[in-house]
Length: 361
Image (cartoon, rainbow, N blue to C red; front, side, top):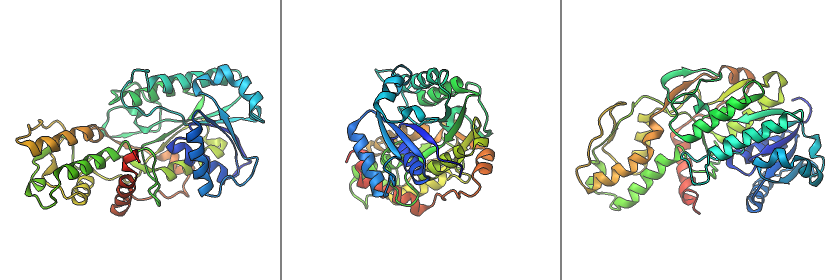
């Protein structure tokens, strides 16, 4: 590892942000964490404390503010936060993960606006900037290899992907792009604080199981739902700890700066494997993939209607099936093994999510 970095971390109280902060502190870097919510700050402090971090009294500083104001209020923040002016590195992890536009204009307001505000600061203050993006800035891709390059505007499945593409466009040539795929809980503890993405499939099956009540009912094994997606296509998912470790090790080496890295799984699970696991876990049957573009079958009865409503909530998560090239990532962090996606791991993810009532507890 090179010398200690002085890092401004945005989004440090978010799910990935907490692990990025922990990894920075573990590896001896100095962190200024931008935050808005005092309660989330307290939760993050508790999390770090459970890991025995920070280990130095001077290694973690908190900066209260809104990322959209970073250019306008930077000088005031420097007056209020000790040595903030010494920051030379930014990891921009703050983001709205909403898939559809809300009444406030998110996710575009936060994701695009924060990229623009940070760029204004960058143009008057020397900073090394690293952007947490998403591998799905490629847009809709069916089974093709997606390279670690800048992409032309694609057909996006949701506004979140589009907002991340727009943000990359602003920073092209000036920042490192770190592109995780769909982030899961910790590979060992299964800890998670954001149950979206792949978790929606598990939550839908869990709700369906509860709605049907009788565990021995024949109806739950004869749902008769055809899902219009390819059974052997894959959903690229990656544990949060692998992403955090990769990000920090990548940015520690200046030779990696201003490049693009896919923080994706080299051996992701295919849809058929995932659905089989979920059906066995929740005692369900009669769900099958019938290929992309297959016609939607109309439910024939109350049970099928109930099942189909749940399947509709997760259909988009089976629709985009790119294969991600990892050449840059594999070269930058060859020593980091990617945790396998096993049945035991998925069951631990589900157990943890149910224990936390899918984030409602």
